[in-house]
Amino acid sequence: MPVYEFKCRSCGQVSEVLLSMTASHPKNCPNCKKENTLEKIISSSSFVLKGTGWYETDFKKKTT
Ligand SMILES: [Zn+2]
Image (cartoon, rainbow, N blue to C red; front, side):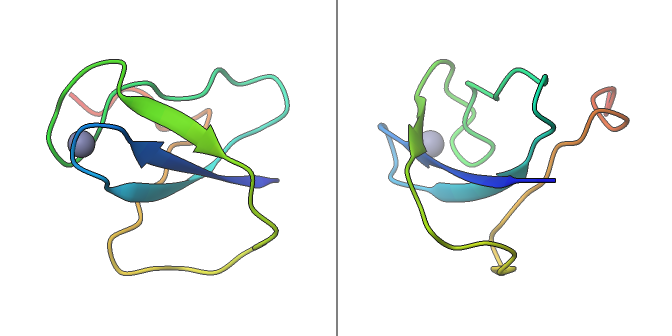
């Protein structure tokens, strides 16, 4: 499963997100909670886990 990096335009938080090919990418920042601030970063990193990373998978969308 590919890993995408998203950066928040508001607070600068970078998140790595596991997405399947058909999943829609997240738009809301998990750090500052603002909506539609995430933009995808083209990255060559593959499966590097960072301490502040968060993950969303197809089977973990319902977190509330
Ligand atoms: Zn943010």
